[in-house]
Length: 428
Image (cartoon, rainbow, N blue to C red; front, side):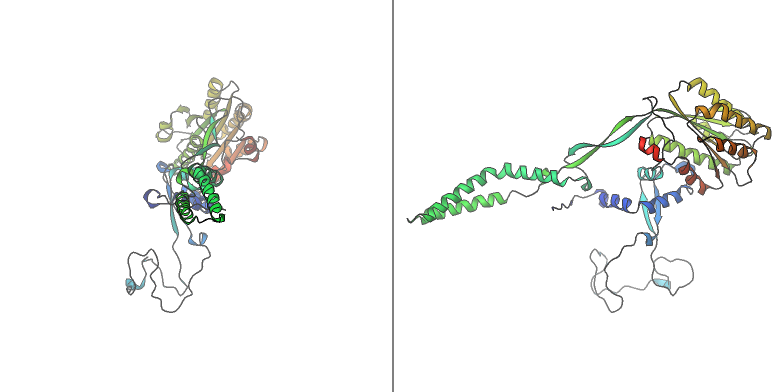
């Protein structure tokens, strides 16, 4: 078995390979940290990178080390501050370098949490891993383009983890044959001639010495041909190709009535921003229709959806009626996968809730692949939730979820869009 050590420098002294290995090895811990971080971020920076903390105990590994006790005067490799014989001052105040708060303890030494920075792409990949639009059907090969990764031959440069050892060794053998093949043939001829002169009973001392010198020169020349060269290295090349998929549209229905206080609206916006990032990250192009409603519903653009200050009373059916009108006008040709996500605090005019149930069951759900209702409230559920629970009990493509705090948003989001086994088999 041959081992290759890539000693090329990484940018800014960081090891890309070690970083990838670290993320893969501690993926579960990092995903938990990312999940915890989602609820703490502001609405405006949900799509940026993140600094996450992993408890030191989760990344600890068994090591061989010197036992405690005794005097030591060793200077460890990599140290650039001390030399043998230096004495290290005791930290002032007896608190150590951390200067942490709290009472003294008689327990053994500990270790701070490990803080690890991940990029925007790494953050979003972890955030939306194993998520997909439910029940997506490939009924029209248009609009939405997904990508699959496939092997695309070899390249002469790449990361060490993609190094193809067998292909590289084949290139090494071919190069050494090309550079030293003729010299080796000549060497064999000279060795055969030398053997004949040695076996000859005549005095051939001068000829033998000349042949031996020539053979030594050829051997040295052959030895100068390196076993492996950077020219021989071949790395597996991966590329992405588009997969034909389906046309899809997502309806975002948000309650902006007076009962929705600022904190509740912020949580609704967080949910919709997660949804928008998921759609744009996973699919190349999905239509998104934004609908805001109080007593009246209005189709708006992205800017107005997230930042308009308009408010009023509450009639939820106005948003459902407008969604039905938009579907019939623009998405009724049978080639669209229609999805909807509705967020509200559950407050609705009591006589309107049964009408919402009827609109869903009679018009929207028959044309919809998946409809998710998110109720954001700490109060007791009201008439709208009770009517929607009846719908969820009889329709598989309708789901109700409850959010009480920011910490609930991401777990609920993942539960709503978790990739099913059937979708995984279909490549949805």
